[in-house]
Every structure is written in structure tokens, then in C-alpha cells.
Length: 283
Image (cartoon, rainbow, N blue to C red; front, side, top):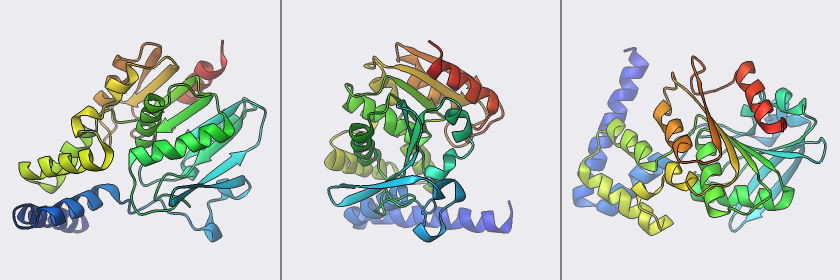
């Protein structure tokens, strides 16, 4: 373990010990701190003055939703519209390698910045809010296709569950987690949090979002889908376990699952994109 990694490891563990201590003396503060660490991205912001090149020559639109605003970027094409939904600590520029493949189809492509990412507002990322952003964009642009990566894929799945009757008829989900419980368990073990903290976090999710951690499951949501889906996940993904992708596919009636090897979490690959295009555009 290098020095930097060692210091990070010690810091993470000591934050965990502090939260565990707080869980007994000041449980509300323990919840606030542990949830903030879980939900606040440290990367992925974009400044308007220094946008990545891929986003510079696009049409942009800023949407307002309650106290939030979020950004979309549009690459104009024909009347077929594809909505792209990125993941954690990322932004709309993550689709740079994907765009040329999709643009061959002539489609209009729209990419969205998640809450607290890119040029969208806020400090906190959560999937229910992301699903609301997606829905505003879907209502406005009427895409027939939605493609989500990582937590963006999870947000697409949740959006489809909440809003089953939209313009969307095909979904592509890349390297996405199925179960919130898996994410929380990983987080708890990373910080070495005590079991008391799991029940405090569970209560926090129930109060804020009206669901228990174990009920938030892409596997459960997908069992209700009528749209057709393509789920792809890499066996070497060290961010989201391969099994998570299989879970989402397992209950989704009209779906196909693609297992890739050696692409990691990023899932950028010409051969995979070829399969995505075939799924989207061959009858």
C-alpha cells in the first residue's frame, strides 16, 4: 500500500470510528455526517468557462425543478431522440466515446448532468431526485431510447418503475447497481460502521424517500417493465459487482444480458457499442 493510499485508508477508518462514537451520543449528527459522505460527490463538477470540448458546440438547455436546476446538452439529428444518463462523480462528457457510435444512426442525442454534477445544482446526489430530472427531460424531449451508466443506469431503472408510460420504449443499462442495500453494505464496510448505523441510515431513507433500503432494488423494479432492455456488465468491474447487472436482467421480461470481459466499470468498447446499435436499430 503506497503512502497516499495508506493515509486515505487511515482517514476513512478514523471517520468511521468517529461516526460510530456519534451513533451513541448524538445519533442525528451521526446520520447527517454518514449520509453526507455517502451522497456528496467530490468530482464531476463542470464550469461553464471551461467545458470539455465535446460539450462546447452543443445546444444547451437549463431546466428548473423545485429549488434545483439541471443542465442538458443536445447534439442535433433526426426525429429519433436518445437520452444519455451518466453515473457517480461524472458528467455529460463521459459519453464522448459513445457519441460517434450513436450519431452514425442519425439520431438526436441529449445528455443530462446529474444532481450535484456537471453544471447542475446542489451538493447532494440521490437517485429519486435524478429520476425526477430524467422525467422532466423525457417529458420535454420525448426520447424513445434511454441509456444509463452506473448509478445513472440505476436512476433510469427507477424512473421507468415510477413512470412506466412515457415515450421510452428501449433502455440500455451499463454497469449499473441493482440494490441500494449492496451500495450501503459496501459503504458501511469501507468505513467499518457499526450495525447501529445501518438501522439509523435505514430510518433516514424511510423518512426522506419513503422506502426502506432493502426495498430499493432494480431487480424488483424491472419485474414490472414492458419496455425492451439491454443490460451489459463487465466481469472485471471493481466498482459495481457483476452480479448486480445479472440481478437487474433476471426479472426483466423483455431483456437481454451481455457479459463483457476486461472493460472494467467504464464499459467503453467498439464491439459492445456495435451490439447496442443492433439492439436499438435493427427491427
